[in-house]
Image (cartoon, rainbow, N blue to C red; front, top):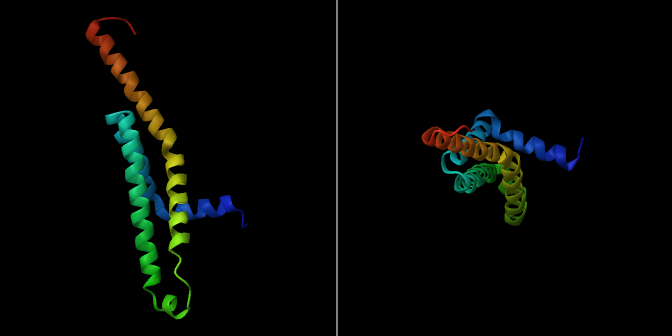
Length: 121
């Protein structure tokens, strides 16, 4: 099947279990600790990790002998837009986790405040 959504999901599976665990853990822990600023920080760090990973992968592919012999043109623009697309897709997929973390943080703060003041919450 050559549907663009299927192709995108296959590309995103290339980060493996460890990569996705790191994305999800970062998307939960930073917002849980820092609130909304943690959401933005988590998305920035995930974007940086995706860019670094993709750049290393492209560099490894370009260093192979068959790349230089094929006469393939430089594809910097294509790489840039594809990388931005993957960053946006991953951040979109982990956003619900970040929102849940902020919600749980706020609930914990309200519960703690009600315990301190002695009011029923």
